Image (cartoon, rainbow, N blue to C red; front, side):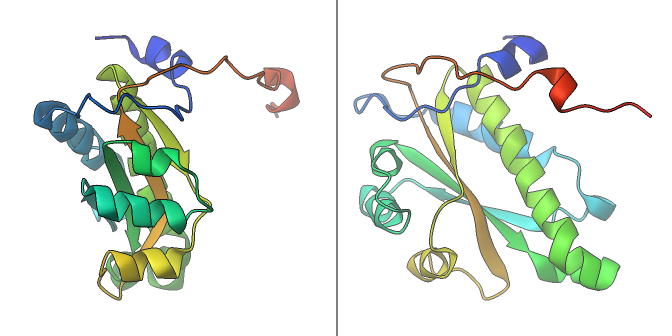
Length: 173
């Protein structure tokens, strides 16, 4: 296992996956457990994670996400959906509009780091037709997809991309 800082430094957006290497159930379970360990407003965990293993469903997701082909090539896609009704009951409008999105994306970020720690690769997808994905996955009305992670064994690792310097992003007061 890598330490946290190495895991963060080794995270890359993987867009080519090994087609002959399925994700082991134990690793998938560990990734999902990590996502569910993420903090959330009022510990409500106002989200749901849909595991898409079906090749045909992944192909449909690809078409609904501007034909980003790696979505269909990855053996697993995790669709992170807000469940605004859970947050709204406790926190009203702010919970419905903000906390549920924060909770869901924090869970997705935890999952993405767990993917790296498990020796796998992923890409975060945010560019997609949310309504059509909800329809394709037959989601309950209260669920809205906000992030997709394509997950699998990397066929290639991209070159690290330049990052902004810390001084340009952080202010102290």
